[in-house]
Image: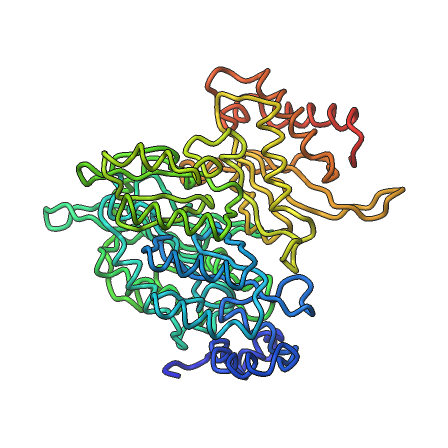
Length: 543
């Protein structure tokens, strides 16, 4: 170790911190070959949590011995060999399931410990890793999925993301953070990375220095969702591309050395930033980096929460990128192999994943666009999805996750399909479903967020249900984020019907072309609450 664990003598460290002092999480990589040889029963239960540092969680129920694996995909960009390797892992070991996450990563299920060494070998051969995909460590770096081809980017951020990602990979100086730590880096002017919800974000900016306009970044710190959401705040600094690594290392060092380690639920960077304030945080940052220029001009124009459907011109003449909907982010291995073939046959083989759980095939010459769109696999994975299916996001839910309270993934797909069958709107409505307060499905930034709960009934005992939140947004940096909870608990079996009634009311009372957010600003949450009350009085559900 090249740093001092300044927190080591804190008498109030939580149990996880004490365990991490005894054994760094990354050391689990050294133990996996032994466990793979001797089977799941050879893994001590006290070691289960450390598997997170290798990108592995035990599925529900843990005792069954099946793992979920998450693979880092910086900026969501994969070459053809990498994509085919991932498809092969899903086919050979993961029962054909291939999930795209809201952090542009890939998730597998149903893996067994005996299979992990071979999976690691396959990933290593194509330059992929699971290190940092989970655990108290730097997670997959979210980036602009259009980096390098984007007409709306100030500059190409691929090499910057790669440099930061590789620096933190298996770096034991930064593998023992207080909690998970999330970074985004993008120069797209439409905030394609949801910058305000990350621990650390680099956003596009420019500044006149010595009479010359310089392109670079502003820095946001302290964002995060879960049960106590915070939006990241902007530091008064301007960072040129060559200094991004310096700033990223410094912010991470501050979190490592000063972040809270007494209570797990208070250990995220957002709590330290909230307590210190943005000025004190900047002072500490400058102590580590040396002088940085003050803020320049923020060039962000709006917010695109990861949707790129259809055929679009790249900044390279004669080339196009095509955005497809993947319903709730779930593909089959066979579909992934087909997508890889199409990307190789018509483009340069790349495929890119979005934080909306969707995908992009870039670098398609004009002459091949029609042929791509005629491929059979793109009947389900469409460039023109129906309104609700195209704007639905879901976490994993109780199908695999030990933290979830309700089933979500397939339920969200069914709810969206039901709404598409019964209702047409002239604007999209983004619906995010989460199975617990941890909010991997990011319900706080959705037009309509559905949070799963368990609630007690008179005749059926505890049942799965949902609470409805409305008005989430990151427009204007999230300044007008409402994300307010409507009163009432809706049984899971009735959520489709209740949403249909509520959205039919929206359709009947909205103005032409009016978005859900604009509508809520105009009529107020009281109007929606009154309508929901009326619906719940008529629908047989939990209220």
